[in-house]
Length: 138
Image (cartoon, rainbow, N blue to C red; front, side, top):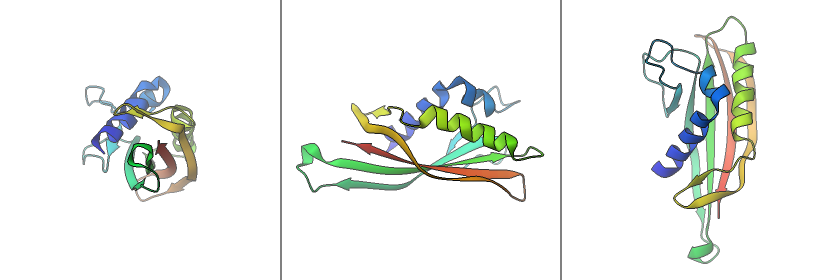
């Protein structure tokens, strides 16, 4: 699991437009990508990602098993309007949609596949949007 999380982080950081959109200003330029939860002192905008499902299909021989991961990305932003959240969502889509993701000598079959998402909605602190991706490893 740790290898998958690391591969996701590396893919996000590799996209300059996305990385620049969520840089943590005043934090020695730390990227605004966080697994499970953002630190209390994180500066919006940022992205939190979680593995919401991880299933190995053992219907085939162990050497041919399929690992099926569902990963949710939540985008948080404090702008006056939802447009910045939407722009960050579009950059996330560019970084991940149908892109190869490799870890532990395995490459995702079909790349990262976006299966669901929400438009930005108002929260108490700003705006939030989500994108759900399915990542299969064969």
